[in-house]
Length: 401
Length: 228
Image (cartoon, rainbow over the protein chains, first blue to last red):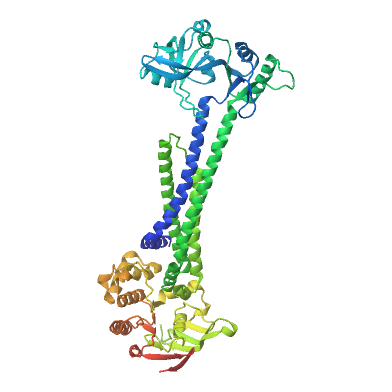
């Protein structure tokens, strides 16, 4: 009997190609849009999270001065190398501590010049930033202690200044300082704030002090906590230590700031998460619209179908046979639309994430929910008018206008 | 199967509406039709002949009275059993044809056999034979929209005949056709009645058509006037 119902349902679908197509289309759009929106939202979140991770999510930065609302930036005395050493010694749970000082400078090689940021630091910097070398080596203790004119360059600087090929051993000039390239950093891409992280030149801190800055200030101390150590705890301990070292009286405000990158991470993650929520809401509306489309088509065809039911009953169909046929018809259309919608959505999400350089993620929960919702709309609105018609006296159904 | 009447109506009433607005479409009908008879129900519109026809086909239920079909009290059957009765014993021809649109003549004729669970090969052969009988074998693939009114009515007759029913109910089958087409349809029905002993009850209001009947039953105001 099920076989018969399937045969009858397939004949009915074929008989009304346009109606069947529109029903399927409604489901395709409903299912497809939800899945695409949610997948893209998730992919955006994942790619932002990945960018943040490239920055080092367990990283803290100590800077002098305190921000007091927009525009006003209260100056504080510069940090010193001794501060960095004290932090390294006294704050537990740290993986690395890197004192840094930087300045915007023009780098020159041959006929090319490139404006970049020169950072004076030590080898701990690469550990804090989780930044690998593609080729070359770190600074030697001798180079660090002697403030030798050597540098490690980022990928953007290599591309803009030297071009393709291995830059190791090449001499570039930073303003008027001839400087040998000893290392090339791995490309990191843009930071989550839109800065090009690869536009960087690292030099020994003492070389920076003597030849660039002319003082012994440390602009910022960058720290990274060991895995599993709470950055909030590190932040609190660093603050306490710095207050002590800078002799800030109880009750007085800090004249420095310990910045926890995880806070940025959380902010950005929350932002993208609400973006995903927004996309999901838009998608839910699409699903609803798709559902209403299906409903419309089903209800518009009720008159025709009611007469059809009357004919079938008159020539000897049993009520439940007619209903089974309509149910099978609705299920076949819903399944067809659902599968097509899922296929379309996966195709589009894949293409979009490829074009936008985002990871291709599929939320199977959403796929299931979208499919079930559209299928339910299709089945409910295909089935219930049919049930009402099948309960009429056959002559009523035949006369239905 | 003895000479027991195919149809035996006794004191059948059918009322529409309630209270003041109540209309007695059928006001106590007694009617008996023997196997092999060709009976025509006649009368002005609103006289109850079509209502009576729908009751005979179990398409509608009477308000009161007894309807025995081949000795079985129809009132005691539930909807499904009434549907089975239609499926196995009754063929319908409607004034408005009532073919499934966008469906080929062959598939329309096959439909009752599909519900009977007839195997595919037999279904096809019998449907083609029925179409052959009404002279439309070469139009088997045409949809109703591609057929003339007379051809559509012949497809409807083929659909009614394909199950070899014991009773054919025809509600003004020639009502939408010109006189030449009507003549064709009537000759077809007469032949089926004469050759296969098919019992036919037919509604008409055209006196020309009435001459084909063995017996005329006149309706007026929900009652049977005379039986000639």
